[in-house]
Image (cartoon, rainbow, N blue to C red; front, side):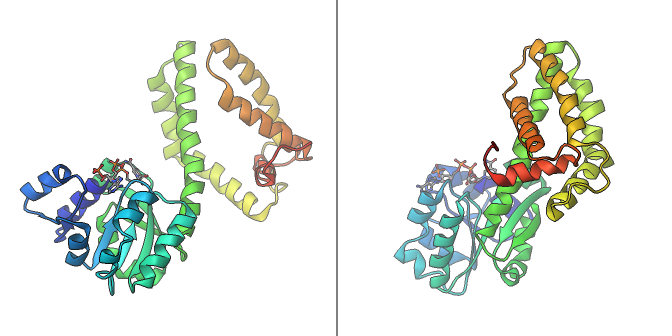
Length: 286
Ligand SMILES: NC(=O)c1ccc[n+]([C@@H]2O[C@H](COP(=O)([O-])OP(=O)(O)OC[C@H]3O[C@@H](n4cnc5c(N)ncnc54)[C@H](OP(=O)(O)O)[C@@H]3O)[C@@H](O)[C@H]2O)c1
């Protein structure tokens, strides 16, 4: 990911210095005339905006949080894009700021090639003023920087919520492909004629807006087009049919459990969004 970020900055005309602990990984940059620092201290000294993308907090702590780096930080801005949990973000942020350096935490939601292609949403947490001050750099890295929290750690909460949507959605897509395979229907037709029109057209947007509004207000009795009881009763024969198809049912059974618990909470006549109450309760009822 670090190479992709460097590629985008170079493509946008930024004069950058790169560093990687394995020198061979920086060779192609050197061959292209990009400055390669021999150490992190040299890299930090070379720029006012410092972009870090390493694997895990331990790597960031050992590479960045050193006395030598601390002496070079004053007046600069450090942007950490590697994964950290919120406590680790807070630890790094406090350390960076204690040395007179502004701090932003970013979270990348896509693959390196999406960053290179310039259609990559990257979420940021930290002061909006800092975000705006380095906006040119952030826009160059992926094309779509989104400020989601004034607190650097807050970005990881937003990223977790986003991943809770994205990851099961992608796995559910593969689940559907497996049903096509088992039942002898076309994965291409499933993708082209069913899933993509839903995702690209107003269908999914409509579902999501309704759910968002109901969850935010915790009101599930407004403009109910299909009750939770309807959703749950349609569901049972599907599961039986999928069992006959011979695909794994773990994912779909979890949905059945959530329906059952939400019905037990008295939401049979409410909108599908009422499963929000089961989710926030955090444990099965009964
Ligand atoms: N790849 C993706 O699709 C993707 C998407 C979104 C977010 N991310 C995030 O991006 C971050 C980096 O992931 P990646 O895919 O770029 O992984 P990667 O290809 O394995 O790169 C990890 C980088 O961290 C360096 N590193 C690891 N431990 C180190 C240490 N102790 N000291 C110094 N350097 C160390 C590695 O150096 P060496 O080259 O010397 O091993 C390498 O440059 C992760 O937090 C990941 O969650 C990745």
